[in-house]
Length: 353
Length: 231
Image (cartoon, rainbow over all chains, first blue to last red; front, side, top):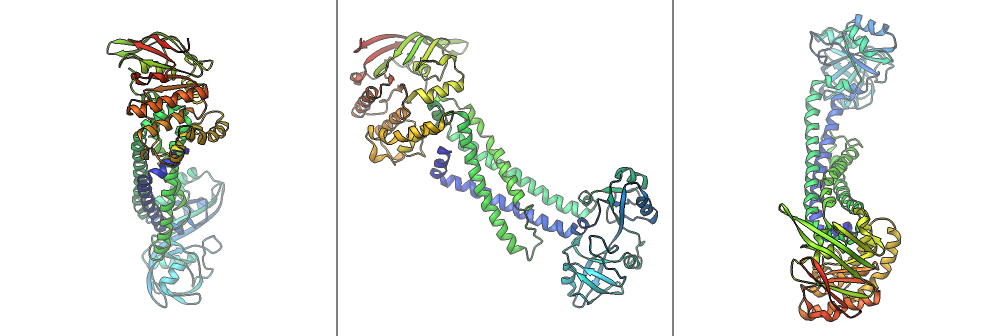
């Protein structure tokens, strides 16, 4: 790194420029990652909080299984409960509706499930548990009343920041949810089964005409999640590609400009591994500084924007993109190493004729 | 110290091959400056490239400090250059980002086995060499801030800082005026004697022949001894 450090100091303008480009791309990637994480949390946090090793959906009319269309009848619930290796089966109903609190009305996602699961649920049919988002939107607190489709419920608890399809979650008992669903034109059947155990999932699913997936895989059964996150993920992937290309192009041009110096160093006796370490080390320094500044700016921006935008600030949206940027940047820079390995020390001596 | 023994080197030229060095035997001895002269295209630089282990001869042997370089791999030849050969190029070929002092210190940072010991040894000699070429006051300047003669002096110091047994010099005065050229040749002659290096010096300019202990003329790839003060 002896020559690399001095090159960095000597050509600091050029390296500052590429460092700034890396920082800007990292800021974009970090901001998009945070936004993606925030939107994802608003979309699916309640689904991921459901208890169970598998979530079971039932396709309707030959279509693929989605949370919007799935309806699970009692026979299917019983079949899953009786299947070998299944330990617990929790039917969960999901429904969107408008709720009226003491201060405001808001669209909410109603989750019907029995108490005692990992997702908070009330024990009485005339009670509801509110997520913090729902409590804020409705301007209610514990002990207040909430009206949904003509029924009034007492708020038993407020907690957890769970959302479904960008709507804050309100939990009811299965019976209360069934009543509401039927009143709103539904069948009153559960939407999804949260199943735990060590069953032969695919076999049981095939036997019951259902689809069983892990909570994470089941997210693709949310059409809004797929389109929303898919678009953002594509943009992030493209930015990763752009970053690798930009870093690769810069270091390729830079190394080509240094080809004569590399030939001289080789003629003087520099080992190729030492020259490769020098080149990659230089790229690593530029990437670490650029990505560090970019992620720092992302965190600062995230802290400011977090109050008004759905922005998730966690290692998954900061450290992971930063690592990917560094690794891809190094891959890009590795392209330039060909100039180092192929440089002929004889050229340092000039013409040999 | 360095012996080119009956070496031959050819280059491809279209469908045929051109003989650049034709069965040449040449010896460089400690403390002796051997000048290699001849017209352009006669094979002087090819001879130097062979001595520097940068090309391998078709036939013959190149013995550097007791090692047969023709039997070495590319990595082995690199190690031999790092440890036993100093090279002064036609142009100083200094690295633009490094100060004069750092141009010498870079010789301690070339990697390979024994890098740590070499680093200590080279760093201890940097100031001595910068002083020996008369540039202590300018040691913190970069190449762009030095004159052509000063740059060539630093290049000479760089070639000697790792205490090579063999010093190879390619047209060191070609870019200098006569007075500066004379100074550089005198410096090379003095350092060769002081440091007991076997110096092979390619030049087409015999204006400074006083600095040469022996002169070998190369014409059409063949060499013959022209003058010797040591015979």
